[in-house]
Image 1 (cartoon, rainbow, N blue to C red):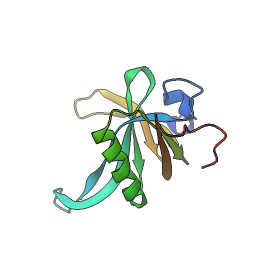
Image 2: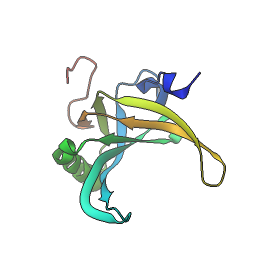
Image 3: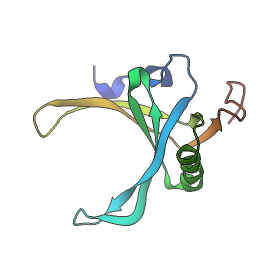
Image 4: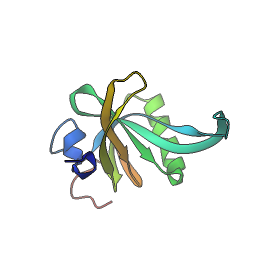
Length: 132
């Protein structure tokens, strides 16, 4: 079976199999690179690092349209001790495996989403009943 045919859902990577959200750890962006491979000052993609299964971290990539939400989320994560739960819209998870430069097998799960909603531990929780 090819890895592209493997189906992965949120329960496969979350801390619990019935989880509908992931806990945010960090948020930020990556920069575009020019033709010489040097970083520019222009954002390429945004991301949220989330706590995943067995203490691992899952980086979820998001489009540039999420800039304001990422900035607000980053401010919360940087300035408070609140737990922030993320509910992603159209989350796409894919398994990958490749041979690294040193000849070792590198494998994992890549993640991207179109948008997200978040709730802090002192705001309303993201229940299954809430339509986002």
